[in-house]
Amino acid sequence: MAGVRVASDKGMMALVVAVLVMCGGGSVVTPAAAETLVPAVYVFGDSTVDVGNNQYLPGNVLYPLPLPYGMDLPQELRPTGRASNGYNVADAISRLMGFNMSPPAYLSLAPELNDQILSGFGGVNYGSGDSGILNKTGLNKSMPLAQQVGFFAATKSKMIEHAGDQGSVDEIERRVSESLFLISSGGNDMFEFLQSQVWLFYIQLATNYRKHLNTLYDHGARRFGIVNVPPIGCVPALRNMSDTGACMEFANNLTRTFNNDWLSVVLKNFEADPERPGITYSVGNSYNMITNFTADPEAAGFSEVASACCGDGRLGVNPWCHPGGAVCNNRTDHLYWDLAHSTDAAAHKGAALIFDAPVDWGFAAPINFRQLVSDGFSSI
Image (tube, rainbow, N blue to C red; front, side, top):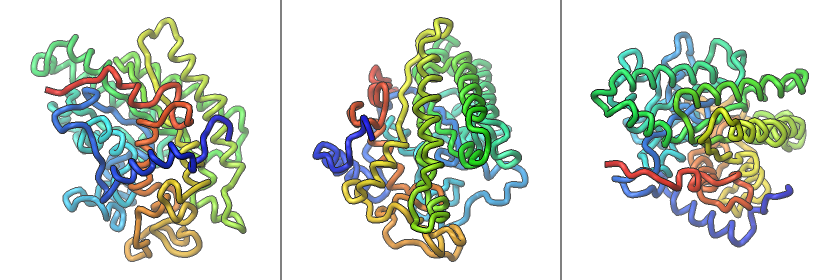
C-alpha cells in the first residue's frame, strides 16, 4: 500500500520488539506514575473502547460479557464489558498517556456522578459497544456517538457547577482544552451498511462526524486523537463468508474509501475552520496497522491473524466466543480475540504504533499521538 512501510522493515522490527517488551504479560510500560501527558482522557466510540457502559443499558442481555471475556484481566476487573480477553484500545492509549487504564465508564458513575472523577481528573469513558457515528446504528442496543457527546456536555456542566471545589472555571477550561479526546467509531456503521447506497452513506457519516466534533469543540475540546476504521473485511466473521477464508475486499474498500476520502477531509476542514481556532489532531491509522499485521504476522509477533482465539468452528465464529467454548492457549499470538474484536496484545501493539511510530510509516497522521500531546502535562 502506498505510503506504508511493510512490517518486515528493520526499523519496524525494532519497534515491534519494543512493543512486545511493553506488552509482556498484559502490562505496558508507561510514564512515571506521578506524571501524565494530559490532564484527562475522554473516550468516545464503539466496542473497541467500551469499558463497561453497555452493561448498564436496560434490556442489554449480552452485558457484562461473561468469561472467557476478560479472562486475562485482574480478578477485581472481571467482568467489565470489554470485548477482549483483557484490556482494549482505550486502556492501551490511556496507559501511554500515563494513566493505569481507561477512565471509568460513564454509566457506572450515573446517576450520582462521582464529582471528583467527573471534575476532569483522569477523564471519563463514554464508549458503547454496537454504537456508530449514525444514530440508527446499533439502535436500542447502544449509546450512539451523539448521545456520548451529549453525556460529555453533561460532564462539563457538572465540572463547571463544582468549579469552586475543583478550581476556577478558567482552570477547568484549560484542563479540558489540554485533555485528549479519543474517538474510535465507524466500524459498526460499515457492518450495518454493506448493502446500501454508498455515496449517501458516506455523506451521512461525514456530516454527522463533523457535527459531533463541532459539539465537542464548543464544550472545550481542542486536542483530538482519532482512530480510523480498520479493515472490517479481515475480521473472522467476514473472512468466514469466503470459501478461502480471505479478507472480504468489498468491505475493506468501503472502509478505506471512508478513511482516505471522507474522514481525512472532515478533519482537515475542521482544523482549518476560522471560527474554531486552536484545534490539533492525530489520526491513528488502524486500517494500515491491521493491514501490516496481516501481511507479515511474524514481524508483528503474531502466528494467527485470521481465526478468532475464542470461539468454535471454522475461524472460531460458529458459534462465537461463549462460556465453555474453545479458547486458544497463547492469546498473545492472535490478532483477533473473537469474531470481530482484537486481543489485548493487538490493542497494545497498535496503540504503541499510533503513539510513537514515525509519521512516514503511515500509522498516524499528520502527527503521531506523542506529538499530539508533546507540550505535555505533569500531574501534581
